[in-house]
Image (cartoon, rainbow, N blue to C red):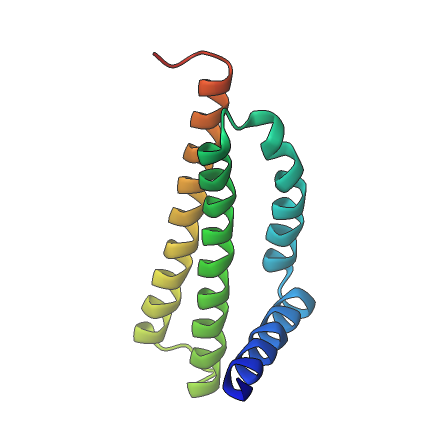
Length: 118
């Protein structure tokens, strides 16, 4: 039980750190909170709502991993290195793809709600 408690505290510390230090993570957190409410009006049903919110959580998860990769890369060497640049670009691309997926999920849910899909 102590291990679980320590893991929870570490996780909360990570969330707190990112909320304080990462503008993009703060923006995504605000979007998530707003969409928790907005999703009720857009989602055609409960399964859609879960998918919609899940897609936003996925964006935040990839943002956390991106930040971890960037911080670790900067710790290894603050100077530019092509391989580290490629690693950072790949992590950034993961965030981008998660955002695209979230957009597709939300737009599809909206289209379903409006009766635009067969």
